[in-house]
Image 1 (cartoon, one colour):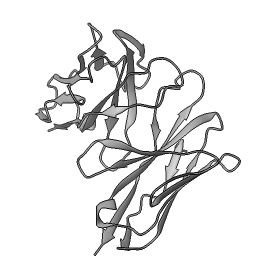
Image 2 (cartoon, rainbow over the protein chains, first blue to last red; image 1 turned 135 degrees about the vertical axis):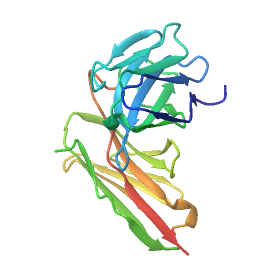
Image 3 (spheres, each protein chain N blue to C red; image 1 turned 120 degrees about the vertical axis):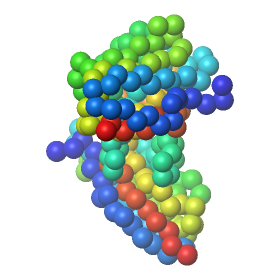
Length: 117
Length: 112
């Protein structure tokens, strides 16, 4: 597609519910990133994929968070047993660059706004 | 201490005004620097890269001072359409150099 597509656009979950957020990156983009943006804050790094390999998951806040990109294209961020502090916008970004030193060429999706009640 | 610090504002300025935003970063190993713009309820978008030699794009000028670990953005002749949150972004060198590290953002409102 022309841009990075994320779904759903909005998600309301009851505390304790599992959620799955989808990211469809720009076709052919090697790198895929997930960021979390809490209200009034800048985005914070969660995890990085190069093709299907998850090279960095250091930003995932707990073991309730899990991300995958099994075929090197679409990615899913799963949050188990959601808590109120998980409420945030989850942004996906892709880039046709791979490897170190390639902070250029990011395209962000519109994000999924998760509200845990 | 946050790695990237910005004055959150808000900055409320009249149309035509000049406004400057500042940002400091704590890690001297930072290698790349950017300003991103984020409209309300939208995704961040790259505004411009920042270099020690300065970078100008129309009404926008960005500057980097490595010695002071300080980044600035100057907007001249502000337009209503400049109203947004401006995010200062750095990238570290070496391992993890694909990560964008964002400041909290500075909110700008340009008033008619």
